[in-house]
Image (cartoon, rainbow, N blue to C red; front, top):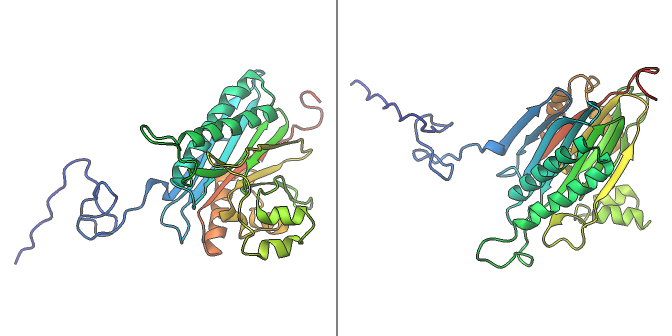
Length: 314
């Protein structure tokens, strides 16, 4: 018997990635075999000339609640300014994926508006975090409904970095992190952020050492976040002026859980990260997946160039 040919689906119809025949319904499932389709945010990559980022759902979560934004602009003197924002949705809150996306986009847009106007990068970072918080807070208010302050309102963490005017600026709320990894690996790698977390509070108070604190089951309970039910928003910012080239690694805990110490992070970052930021971000995401991929993982890599001595202004 001649098999009945499968009819050609109408143009624009999305077919199942598993059976290659069934149509995908509006909820993202195959009408024929029931297979859930990959979501657009399951794996995302973006590369610009001076920054790259990769985000992956990981191996245990059913969706990716991380988000990122990378961009580039110029200061008024024409010199480049590069931005990376990474956000991690709080899984215990409602709509964490929406929160992380809203925060990343709002912070990025705020920085792109401020930097060309020569707002100091650290002040621009502070304003960007406030803009991100406002964007997440607005998700708690739905038309015709009461605000969700007491209903686990949408929430996320944020970490961002700006490389501009010879400065390296970081800003954060929560437990996503930024690391400085010099191109010369004989120079130590440094963590540029301090977690808003239970473990960090215990270490700061001298009640536990870092190994004890992060081994506790309460270690990753965050004490700061963006969202309508945050206790009090305290944006953290810091400014650095490295004297040598290197890269800034901006990431969620989906990565640093598998490279908690600065030495481990330095070992995980490829030696050619400065010249291949996208490849480096891919390698770092792979490091987390190889380690177990228990969480969503997002990494941005920003090269920090240093002008040769005698070139340009001091």
